[in-house]
Length: 170
Image (cartoon, rainbow, N blue to C red; front, top):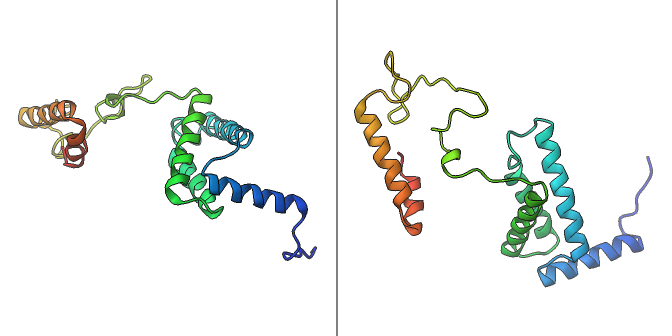
């Protein structure tokens, strides 16, 4: 096993550390470094999706944002600036990977049919009780009407009220 002297940095390691410290003080990455990281992120996102490791191009968004933010914080970045930089890098990486976010409606459970796949329901969408024979989404007209009204309120909610409505169980 080769012994590594941690007390003696090579000139390349010192330059890298100095660059990272400079970037942390400025709160931004150099354009070349930024572009290279975005390109690498886009490649990773595309590769994971094509390999079936994620169900969508956005499947690694949370772990990647966390990892980028953590690395930047370890380099001396304040948390808020590191988080903003991670978000910006991922936005550009998704653009490079040609990822298109689904609409709000497409993200809801009601969109069970996608690319010819039907997910069979056994429980009511509203109350989660068992579905009676011949019912495919709601156990009763009351549950169907309640659910419809709740979704209508969500769609009509003002931006400041949307979060409150979204956190209340439908």
